Amino acid sequence: MLKSEKVTRRFDFKVAVDAMDLEIQAGHVYAMLGPNGSGKTTWMKMAAGLVKPSSGKVLFEGRPVGRESRKKVAYMPTEPYFYLWMSVRDLGRYYRDFFADFSMDRYRGLLGQMELEEGLKAKTLSSGMAAKLKIALTMARDAKVYLLDEPFNGIDLLARDEIRACILREASPEKALVLSSHLVEEMEAVADRAVFIKQGKLVEERDLEEMRTAEGVSMADRYRAIFGHAKEDRA
Amino acid sequence: MIALLKYEWRKTRTAKLMLLVLAALEELGFLWGILRLEPGGRPDGLIGTSLFLLFLMAFGGILLIGLQSVLVLQRDLNTKQGYMLFMTPRNSYQILGAKLLENGLSLAVAGGFFFLLGLLDASLLMGRLGLDQFWNMAKGALTALDEALRFSWDSMLCHVAYILASWLATVSIAYLAVIVSASLLNGKRFNVFASFVFFIFLTVLMGRLMRLCAVGVAEIDAVLLVRSAIALGYAVAVYAAAAWLMERHLSV
Image 1 (cartoon, rainbow over the protein chains, first blue to last red):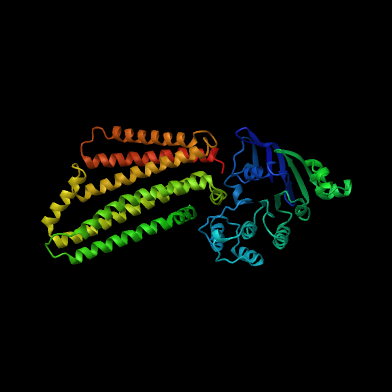
Image 2 (image 1 turned 30 degrees about the vertical axis):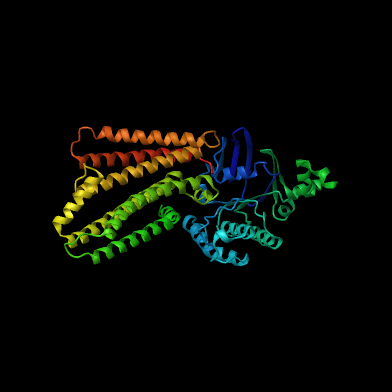
């Protein structure tokens, strides 16, 4: 479905993503895990066609990502990105105008669940409200791949529950969801596959159920083992 | 394309509406002056000031519309708000094309609006002053601006077309300079200075081209039309280069 082949992205002398091979398949929810600066966001931006790879390529259904892939790949950036002069309603209309798979009814439903009013201006939203709005806009699309960068950041426990429920509702055999986060426990309840990234390199991609049954290891345990915080955490 | 045009307009709507309100205030002042003017009498300071403001606002407005468009592009390329634009299923040719087209249309509408407003004001003034007095006043005002100017509506239209076309080409050069700064020169030292030098170089080159292509054309209106055509062609060529650069090298 979505495939990165030896994708590298350099920023001056820093290599953010280093020759990463990864294939995202339909029917799975991927947890993309790694500490800050490990390259998760850069990889997602390349998959969304916002950042150009320095070398290698990202393909969606066999073709390089770009205008066509953006019709079927929904990307949610981690940073607030709304035009500040828009209201919550305007933002829905903006998505409706550009994305054929966007449903205004679904958007209104998600706004209701997240207790967001359509008349609110983007510039008046708190960080938690903006985070919920990003989710509502992205999940109101009927995309094939959802790339959600840090969807649980900056929001309270109840909102996280709503977002988790929303993501799980969307999971289906025809769709793939990729969620990046460093909140490992939050991801454990949502994902069925984990992608560990360290210093721009793919360390491993694992099936979580298989890892739990065959090795008796949770995603958090594996995270600690890979990123080397096990000793600190126990202390 | 319609959706892109619509939101490009929305991004700059407030400044354009403010310009419209200011023009309306100026026009009210002028109309008040006309109402007070006796037939065949001498125009007072209010009429002169209103006409001067109209002239200033026409040029200032056209300048503002172009500059604001460049600033919006700069913001789209260098802030997170740019995701709103670049995550849409549109390519760089469409995105930049919509920006240039919206700017060209806004310039044409603003130019046409101020031209018609000027025409209306001139007609009202002519009605009050009488033809001879108006004619002498208009000639005097134009000669003070530029001795080469002749007072004829054809000639005025050629000047307006030339100003709009060359300003649109300048805006498209500014687009390219901003895109070079955000892509090829991104993160480099002297980024802003280098892109400014690049902008100056392309602007000077356009001026040279316009002069070269109009060599041998004697009639001033024809010179203006040739230069306008060169400016529009230059704007299209610069747009194509800028969109290609965006498509191949720009990361937001």
